[in-house]
Image 1 (cartoon, rainbow, N blue to C red):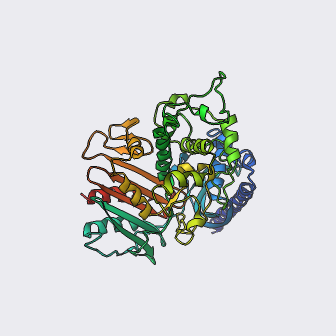
Image 2: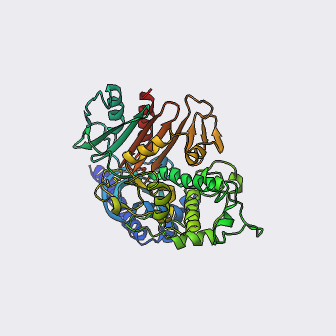
Image 3: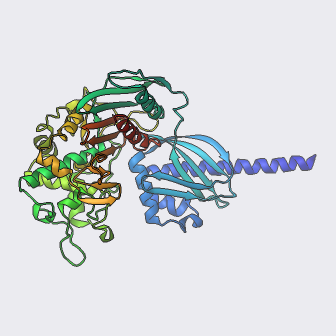
Length: 495
């Protein structure tokens, strides 16, 4: 009996000590993270085994990106203790955190960041050092309780389309909206849905304004096409001759050869984002974007580097299109809003398309995070040409209809192939070209994803069909690709 009691007390003592160690580790980690003491976290809190697998620089970059996207940790909630863990987690775009099976126990907490909730798993070794950890979004299975209240309408959507819409929309949280425009043989119809109290119903939102994300790149390339037609520049011209700023020289002292075409079709060799984006706070959760024009200019003149192995190869670059828009503002001596209003918004009568949310505040739909909470809007400033435009399905439907007019030389130039990505996809200026070899199946497409929004646009010139989707679904939602898939399925349903 005494042996049994002794064994029980030994196990209980170990468990209590382990729990206390984990509590202290978690509290220290949160404090140092919120104070941005990433180097201290790496050197004093992580095991030698962990540090052998990731450099201090890569670790700091990872934690800065977490802070950039999610903000401070406001609170924590203990979930459970468990035994070792294994697997690989994709944390954020282009970041993976791996962890292997461990004999050490680990704990699972739920962290409430400023922007969203994330699960945090951590294991500490016998020296009370973090040996393994993973972080991933806290998500619920919204599809289980979804109720389909979408009504079939012979004049707008049929039964097949109703099922397509519900089967994709059911995965998103309450207050999710999807605004849709269908163009069949040149005639436009609008439809919208919203989820409220787990019920997905028809919702009139064709005038509602959302961020359109990277569809903004199509408008930026439209300005490029305008300048080419007006003989202001040539697609193969080096950009160095069009701005007063001296772009960072190559190592041999020569000027970088970056053409306008390579910026538009993502073959310039530029990275996806400016390397000083995180350093300056990036697209922070604050309402005002801390990444200013002077930060961008400093990067261009002092730090910009090309990946020479990727010059002439397709490598998607928000930086490239941001640089394109920046050059145009310098050439025209106009603000971003004035430049795009002159060459796009007013010209095509896109009356509710803008960079500024205050201009459309009565129509603006707030973006949602992955848990369905509203997130603040912030101006993207110098990155606006790559993803900062706001619009609605009525305006984008106008723009889609313009594609069917073969007399517009700018729009025709944008649809000409400038680079072959693979056998099924090429790129023009701004537009991706789907099935480029087939006149009957060729389509022009672009999508867009930001912190609180996802968008899709596809145009079929041969049949004068198009589908446009705008939503307040975050790009970090694990089901975000269902917006694109919804677009493709609805496009096929028009045939």
